[in-house]
Picture 1 (cartoon, one colour):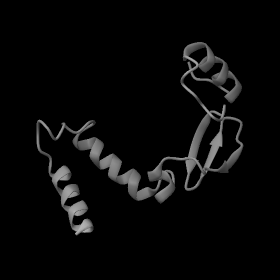
Picture 2 (cartoon, rainbow, N blue to C red):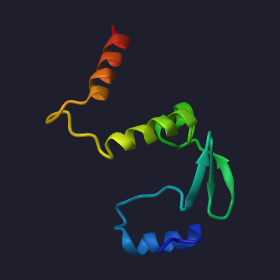
Picture 3 (spheres, one colour):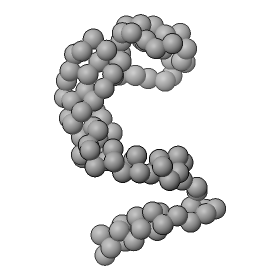
Picture 4 (spheres, rainbow, N blue to C red):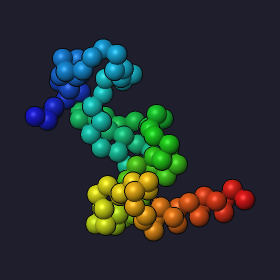
Length: 101
């Protein structure tokens, strides 16, 4: 069941999760684009607490969305590098290595 408001989701959260799982802002994030994020009531704000990737390129950046879509067509979850090789894993390692040298 999808919560319709931040208050409804907060009440369900308090009932379902242990108190040790913290949440600084009792707001239900509905969508995000660029540096902005909106709640279910349509209130928007600048996202100063988003993940590092979102802060670097913004939410829903078209190139990131395209890359994720391409990846999902290949593997939903790529195999662990400890068990199988994938070209993307090796290419990423090469890029990181070349950037650090």
